[in-house]
Image 1 (tube, rainbow, N blue to C red):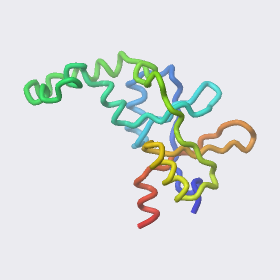
Image 2 (cartoon, one colour):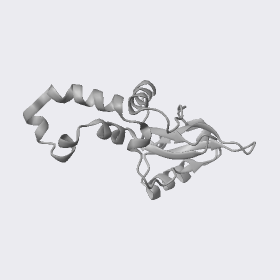
Image 3 (tube, one colour):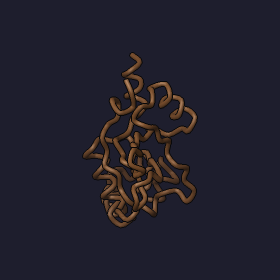
Length: 149
């Protein structure tokens, strides 16, 4: 089995999108991470879904999670408004490390080693056969665990 066989299709996004659009894509595709690409399609980042969620939280909640126990659901509207008002570029770390990228022929052990070394929630399967990047999908840890079980 190779990376192309294990890859879960995903829709890459560009930095011009909103945080809400990114969140909607993550939910629709049930993806573990959002894949951000440059205008020419080269992978720039794989942002974990948890980071997208955290970016939508109001600052007081991020600084004091116990605050939620007091205010409860009253901040839900704030989360929705914040997600709609922020751009994806606003939540991308200023210094991103490129996500781990493998060829369609990469082995499961190669992908697992890259994930462990990089700390990334996914590896990107990219085909560069015609010198242009073609994102085939992502492989996450759960998929690799399923392969080995």
